[in-house]
Image 1: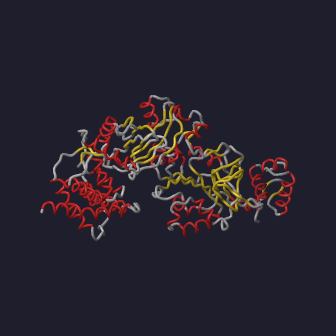
Image 2: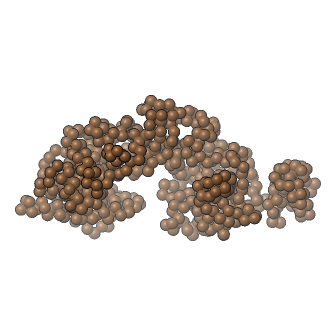
Image 3: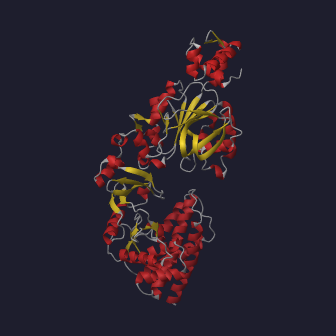
Length: 591
């Protein structure tokens, strides 16, 4: 017998509390007394209950609705929860005295669900203890950083049946789980007024008919979902068919559901707020648990307090900034202003000399090149800087700003400051090529010719003489912050090192895609006069070397599976053009 929703609710209630009155049944099932009475009559006539108790036939009828298992998704970066998420996944935060994922596992256990899979990725090792403590199965998602949560569902697709799909960072004030469920559903709460959440439209039978992002006075998706066997079977087919499509890569599993909503029968499961909590920001969590920060065991917050002399309770307005290639950064506010916390990315200790970086930062602050710098820890790689509000990046087409950038470079190069790190385009490029070979042969027909040109040009540049000077070595517009009053700061000194003075010019010209006319104008600002033929030749040579070096870097990134987009061709163009042109100028000069 295919049970209606009300029949299921009544049958399930009687399985848990046999012999209760119809009035108690109506209250238990949250339906009217008349509806409860009608369901009891139907179930009695079908032989599923007798004297308000399940018959053997009734027990058999209830079995298809038994929950098989639960999947808890815990692989994501939780980047909106920076900087706490730099130290631990969001699901492992302790809220109101309980670890979020542990509370959820315990609620599943209370409901009689012990077959639980936790899919992990980011900081995966921190979840492994759950296997011993709760008997869950941990599955590692190696694609968590490159794909959205569809990759986690793909890993467990064969386990899907009557399955709860949960997020590790939800907090349920009341246990929402039961060991039987009628049909696939998605949890929802009602929002009065405008909301940016995923809003639901339903038909008269509560089937979800449409999902839209944003709405007003609407029921919106929040918390867990439940797949029944029919839903799981069809969703698995869709996922397997579309998983390898480029457009699927960044989709949530909910996106795939919404794309195929007519094929996937899913109900709305309404909850009265505030039953389910999803914390999208630190401030939102603090509103729920005012003592969260005070009780938080966080080295990052301890660092901030030590540097700024503030209380933990002052730290607010925390949100992630654009993530760089090597670091994670977040904004925060205290009573004394706005700041940026920089957390080192995984593996950066192998790429960045933090002692050299700190020396360069202190030099830049002394020279007035970077007034944002507050403190850096060279051993651990973290840094605190002042946040520049309403800033913009350098506009190289504004001659005054171009002049200021070149004068800043000259000031740095003439400072006499030294760091214990050297940087050479040629040595860096050769290092990138050696790394590429670990992935296989380099299949670029004209790269050997460029390599030969780079080696020859490098010898000529060295022969020009001149002692190495402190260079920024990542000198381009995105690392210049122009404030509203026109003040300019040069930030991100991780690659600073002793180099040929023209290195910064080379990177600047390539990354800003300058024409030769604009290059000449930039050098006029740098020297405060027109460059000599020797200076022009030397600086143009470093443009070619910069293009070649960053092109080899782009080839390495692509060999590692990254996509650098148009930059590969930009670097290639400047390498191809200016290696050859600089060599010709040197040969003309040398006769």
